[in-house]
Length: 260
Image 1 (cartoon, helix red, strand yellow):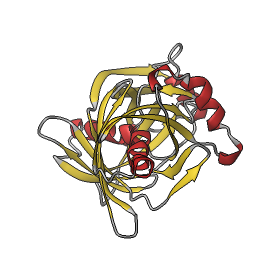
Image 2 (cartoon, one colour):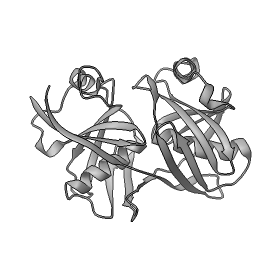
Image 3 (cartoon, one colour):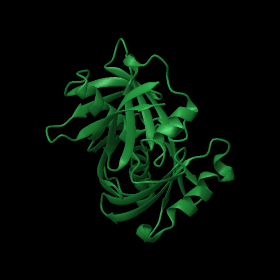
Image 4 (cartoon, one colour):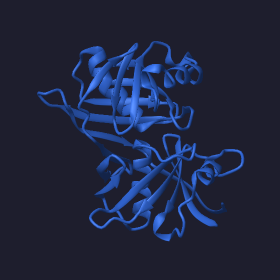
């Protein structure tokens, strides 16, 4: 079949997006793997289908590069908002449905896109770091010299650790660069490689830093290999993280049609 698509990236985390309203058949696992392959296909960290939704602007279905439907993707959520805006489905702000529930989004005056994440109820000490769910499962470990770390090797070991079986986890290595400033590198489950950026991972790292440092910062600037993201949140009396916002760029790269 012929598939019309748009390519977007958010701080180097790149995605193939297509309009599900025009699809006769949803691509299968092998077809999505082909589309995301950087040598034989288009190349991307993930594949998204925009779906119609009666009560909200749209629905979002997300697949990892391995072709399997996956959990929430923060950078993907911001990119699909930009895509929906280009289709006339999204104004300056609105809501959409993802696998982990409804999300609110805003397009800021400077062109950046803010995505509201779901509340985080629990952050667990785990191995040498923390484990939490920000729409996707994440392990966060704080290190020094993160730029010199062999993330593909170490990340893969932790991703398959017994503690996270059977599903595995995404793995983040975070370095504190100053008050409210982090540098984060992520090994993503489903991509099975280090990505240039991971929105849910950056969010998990910012939240985990509250426990790691004991500081009650509410606003974080996070550098990744692909660029800068911002995370803000509140913490209520029960220790639940609420009003979590992930903000950063969502850039259209190119349009195309491909046979799958």
